[in-house]
Length: 320
Ligand code: SF4
Ligand code: SF4
Image 1 (tube, rainbow, N blue to C red):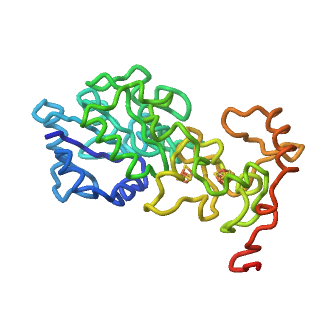
Image 2: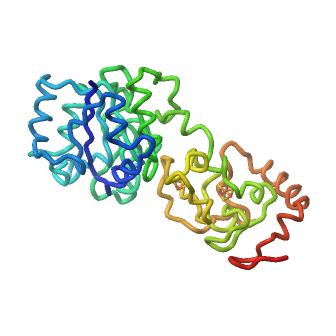
C-alpha cells in the first residue's frame, strides 16, 4: 500500500475540484486499483486528525510515499508564514519538515508549480511555488532540493490541472515508470507538456491562413489575432485530453489563457497585444519574427475559400 497526503496552501481549491472530475476510473476506484492509501485530503477527509498524521510522518511512524501540494507556499507576513496557519503552525514549516521525508512530491496546479495568481505582483502574501518562482528555479524548497527518491518536485501545472494529468502522473510513480528524463525543463511530465494547446484545436486551419475571429464564442476563425489566445505559446494537451471528456476553451470560442505556463497570469485576457505594425507581440513558441511575417504574408494570400466564405456566417445562421 502506498501512502498519499494532499495538502493545500494559498489556493482556491480548483485542483481538488478538478480531481473530483476524474472518470474511468473515478478517484476512489483509482486509489483502490493502485493500492493507494489516502492519508488525508482537505476536502475529502472527514477525520480531524491531520496534526497527528503530520507528526507521525515527522517521527517516522508513517512512511510518506507521495506528497501532493496544491496552492502556493505563503511566506508572509515578513517571512513568518502566519498568513497560512495549519494544524497549529505555519503551513510552510510543515512543508519544510515533511518534504525531505516524502519519496515523491507533486506540485499540482500553477500556484504550487510557479506561484500562479497569488504570487503575482505585488504578491502581498509572499507566495511562491514549491521549487520555482515563476520562471526562476528555487521557489520555497530551493533549486537543489530532492525528495527521498532523488526526484525534484514534479510539477503538474495548470489552473487547474486536468484530472487525467494528475492521476496518470501518480500512476507512473506508483508503477515505477517515471524517470527524470521524462520531465521537461520545468519538471513537468513531458507526455502532457511537450506540445502546445494548438495541437488538436479545430481552429488550426484558421491560424494557418491567418483568419481571425473577432467575437467570443463564434464558431469560426482563430482566437490568436484579436482575442488574446495564448495557445501557440502554451504547452498543454487541452485539445487532446479534453475537459469533462468533451471540450476545451478554444473549441467553444474562448481563448487559451496560458494557465500551464510559468508566466500565468498575464492579465491581458481576451485582447491580443500588438506591436506598432499591428502584429501580435507574442509569437508561437520557437518562431522568429522574420519567419512569422514571411509566412503570414504567403498564408493570407492563399487561404482556401471554404475558410474565407464559411458555411456559417454567425451563430445559428446557416448559408445554403
Ligand atoms: S484558437 Fe488558439 S489554440 Fe486554436 S488555433 Fe487559434 S491560436 Fe491556436
Ligand atoms: S486551454 Fe489554455 S487556459 Fe485553458 S486550461 Fe488549457 S492551458 Fe489552461
